[in-house]
Structures are given as C-alpha cells and as structure tokens.
Length: 364
Image (cartoon, rainbow, N blue to C red; front, side, top):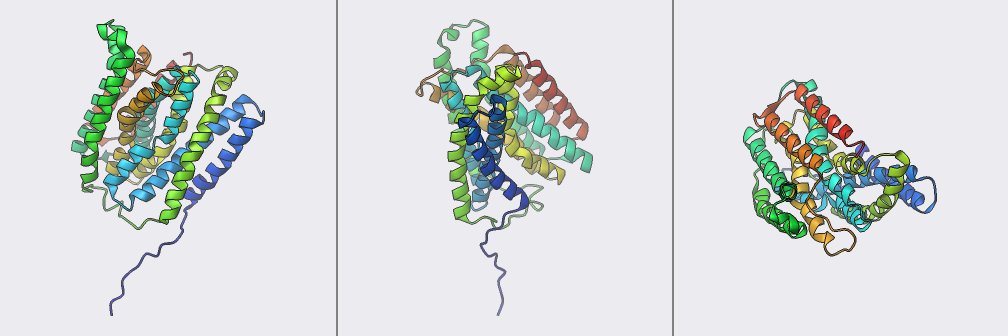
C-alpha cells in the first residue's frame, strides 16, 4: 500500500519570522510608551519609525504566506492591496496634520528607495556573489515600460503647473483625473497578474512548498499588523514635526528618505536575499512591483482620499527637484535592466545615485 508524503500543518516560525513578529510587538509597545510618556521627540520618532518598518515587513510576510495558498498571481494582487497599508496610514495622518510636503516627498522617496536603494543592493550583493545576474529581458522591458508610463502620468500635473498651462488652474481636479486613470490601469493589470504563469528561470530554485504558517496565524497576524500600523502611523506623524525640528533636517529629506525607507524599503529586503541566491528574475519582479504599486495605487488613493478626510488636499504637483529625481532615476534603471542582465558595478552606481539625490534634499 503506497504511502503519501504529507506535510502536516504545524506552526513553524523561522528565526527571521520570530524577529519580525516579536520585534514588531516590542516596537509597538515602546512606540505607545513614547507617545504618552515624554522620552524626547527624537526617541519617539526613532522608535515609531522602527515599529512602522517591522510592521510593514510583517504585513508583507503575512501576505506572502496567504498568497502561497493561491499562487504567485494572487500573491501579487494581495501585496498590491495590503502591502502599502503602513504608508497609506502615514500619508493619511500626515495630510490631516497638514504635512503635504512630507507626503509628496515620501511618495517619490518610496519609488526611489526601491528602484535605486533596494535594486542597487540586490545587484551589488548578487553580482559580487555570482558575477553577472541574468533575468528575462522581456519581463524587464514590460516592467520598466509600466513604471515609466505610470510615473509619467503621475508627473503630468507638475508639468502643467510649471509651464503655466491652462490646466494649472485646476490642479486638484487634474490630479483626481490622473489618479482615477492610474487606478483604472491598475485594475486592468489585475487579471493579467492573476493569470501570470510561473514560467520563471528561477522557478525551480523557488520551489513551491506548503505554507509554514497555519491560515489562522497568517490572517491573525495580518489583521493585528494592519490595526497596529494604523495606530503607530498616528504616533509616528505626531512625533515627526518635533523630531524634524530637533534634528534640524528638512521636511523634504524626512519624507524622501526616512519615511520612505521606514514604510517601504524594509519589506523588500527579500529581493536582496533572492539576488544573493542568484534568483534574479524573482528578485527583480518583487523589487520593481513595489514602486509600480506606489505609482498606480498608493499615490492615486491618497489624492482621492485627501478630498474627503479634511486637512490638506494632496495634488500631484511635485517640487521640480522631486520630478527631476524620479524621472532621472526611472530612465537610469531602464537603461540598466533593459538588456536582461546586470553586474555589481551597476548596483553600486544605483546606490551612488541614491546617495546623491538624498544628499541634495538635506537642506530642503
């Protein structure tokens, strides 16, 4: 009588899982303490930023565990819907506090943190370990094309403003129209994402395995992380302005670098780990998918939500330096990955560009 190999459903948390879960819990408790006990604005800001980063990572990890049950396409859709919750909450609370400049810088900063910082680290680490990283050039071109088109649409209101076009007198309406169109494009991409076949050169290396977390744990942690992210985002924004003043940094730098990394880049460290294992296709897909979500979902939702929550209204009219930074970065990344391969030096160049852009915003 043949025996079937079974994978019993059991609670298995890796060391990194435990760090994320228990570290996030501890950071949330500390963030709550610093919110209601005066331990200094910088301490409150740092602890809240750490809590946001760990919660973002926990949301991503929980979504991944849920997605393992439904396939790669469904994972992408879930990630699109839930992966940016911490940044969404930060954006909403910041807008209610009138911190429009911080929110705009954080939107652009989240895109830059992924395509320059995270992708640069992935190419650097993977290239040093394996030499030349190779990935599907067709998929790379498609991803880059979508990123260029979405970012181009996102900065059209800025262009209208700076050339004094008639549309510049209707910035909020134009921004809302662009936001709706970007969300429509995202909706059109969902069926294709769900139908996407796992025909990847890395597929054998990323062999499907039974989810390590029981369903109740994945859903429970996702719910707890989402609720905690809403609370901590409020505390984070409450400490943001005093910390900016205490550290003598500009709101633009805080949004472009600190808020962007805390809310977004940490959850994509898995892309660097995959590149280190020479799983370049999968790494590139994860890393590029995040800025696409920001341009197609997060920014449009914040524009539309800002019209109904009170506080400051958000438009897609960005400062000239932000527009130039994101345009130059997207074009640079397109040139690097469009041939389907990358080396460590190109990763180092992306990191260098990120450092230059971040430094240029230190003063505002």
